[in-house]
Image 1 (cartoon, one colour):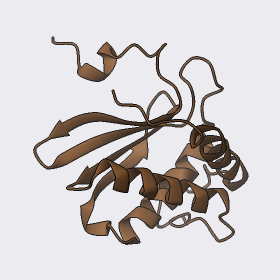
Image 2: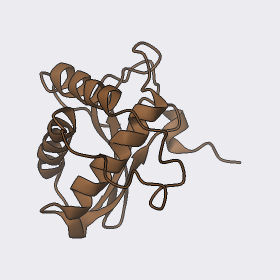
Image 3: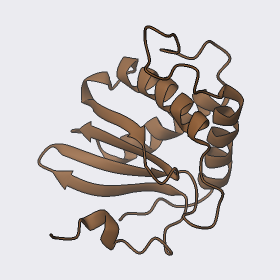
Length: 148
């Protein structure tokens, strides 16, 4: 089997940031790297699940909702994938920053966190999600964005 592109990226060189992972016609996959791989502590899975619920809700209801295809966690728990259609990288940078700032300051119920709405609705941690979002935006936004 062919090795997929994301496994060919030297993860020892990745820093926190937003990367263009791949482009397929009008779809762009972004790698939102919240933790420096193999250096920083990875995301707590409950925090990642919470970020997914809040982030997906914000993105799919926001200004660019028609351009959002997918938002979900990486299996390695170092960040999220965001798949969009026809948005510029500058727009994505702003959108990611605004989304994670909102998550860091979230003071409402977690969207979709009821038994009838989620297959593992108790597997959430809002405090850790807010801490993780803060860690990302406070330490990352001082730096330049990188590309894969």
